[in-house]
Image (cartoon, rainbow, N blue to C red; front, side, top):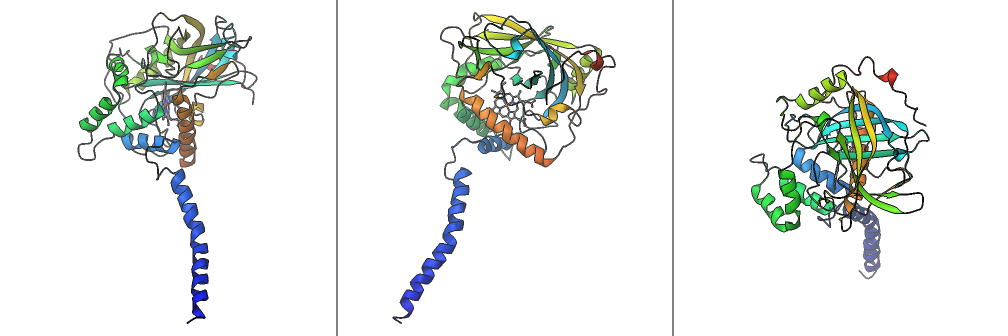
Length: 368
Ligand code: HEM
């Protein structure tokens, strides 16, 4: 018996040695996956929260899943050149790849007029510099932090029985976040335009322009259409907004002005749920012209994630925490959908280009 004792304990030590490594690894993965901290916000938890609302649709963007590719060009006016050294503020023309979309993770959702619409753009300078942006047609963002974004997604997650959000959970979210009431009111009373082509799209997050003397200027920006039509509800139909955009782009180019709003004294630069004053100074920094539309099956926009932190020298992120969370979530969404393969999009334009269009656009080629 006395001989067996050391054998037993050394066996136990050997056994512990064998199981401890996999246990440690498992614990590491669990910690990284947020199992021990369910309220943590990571790129994975943000995507799971989005998926909890609209389900999983392999190959599609995890948000703004229904969309179409567009292309054209952008020309700086020079009016903002004193505020930033970025190429987009010089009086120069650069090519643009873009995407119009509806917010939400459902790629085959119907085009209800009140759904949040977006435009995403990549402006490419000849020397390889690039400015990517994703803008929504709402006056403010409904939440001020990534944590609140995640909590809101959980609150509006459809109940498996009714298929609708639980009103109690939504009311509890509102009650716990009274500072978001003003944003909620602004969103509830926003005016809806007749379609993608006549909409104003806003950055919502703030950015910092850097001038040649090293001075910084906090701004928000918007794409404001040359022609804006309110209160003309588009025809109801599954893809009616996309069809209308296709028809408009097939008949003539569409134009937007890039309008910068400079933060006046006391504006909240960190919080996208706070509206800025109507009296803040505005500058027309350039014009966007779109004249081509193409399905996501073949269009260049599919290979791009419009990460708002892909910025050229002369534009920097503000310390709004939503920007960093967006960047992380977009990259994760891109990585996941890229390895899932290309699905069939809901909408494909009737004609990929206007017959007289591409050859007439004198834009420089993108540097590789
Ligand atoms: C924490 C907050 C947010 C999260 C987690 C989030 C998440 C996402 C994700 C995962 C995508 C899909 C990206 C891809 O696969 O390429 C997306 C698309 C988009 N988001 Fe957000 N988003 C947030 C806030 C915002 C804000 C503040 C805006 C402001 C305008 C915005 C505008 C857009 C636009 C325009 C697109 C579509 C881009 C495209 O057409 O490819 N998002 N978002």
